[in-house]
Length: 147
Image (cartoon, rainbow, N blue to C red; front, side, top):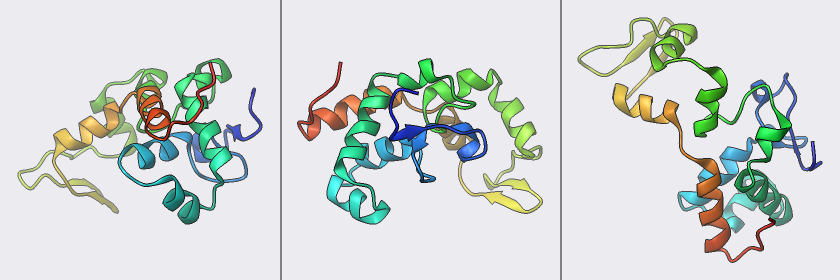
């Protein structure tokens, strides 16, 4: 790994890139900031300093994770499903969501209930291009982008 602020270990967050010493995925940083949380609010709520936030943004923007080859890419990023190489239906079966279609839109797995529309859940599984989101956040805050 090229950045000691960003790590991945198979026993934490299922091997996703994360902030060192924390259970905060790189995508969590990107997602929260992209969808409106301010840097100051994120820093306060998650106790992460601005430098680490910027490094997480650049790590994602530059797709460093591809070279790092983590056990898994971040849940929520489009790279996640490509690493798993499985269909949405296979994902549901592997997770135990075998009886997932119903008129009420509730996914059931004995103990776990996920409320919502199945297509919304599919969109979440398909993910978003984290690196594009990271570029937008870096531009929004006028942070220096590493190249």
